Image (cartoon, rainbow, N blue to C red):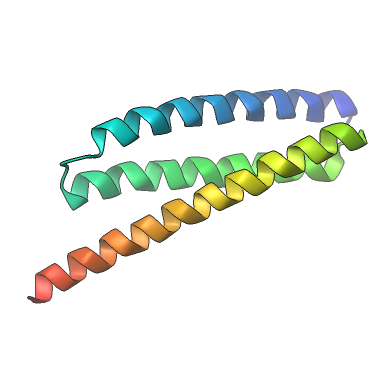
Length: 104
């Protein structure tokens, strides 16, 4: 595939990052005072979106030849991986909380 394809993929991934950040900001405000079911229902889609974003960014990082763009993609990729892991940790935390509440 050509460099143009990966440049377009990078631009689409950048737009996805911006959308995810806006969605996260709206979810953070709405998260307070909700039950664990609602919070888990919001965390799972965000986790999945970050997984898809990471897949695209990794593909871009592997195929882009320009070193400056490649470094930028790597930084965004690292941040996205960190954020995905935070969502995963929160999911595990909420699921453990729910399972302990059932047994008590």
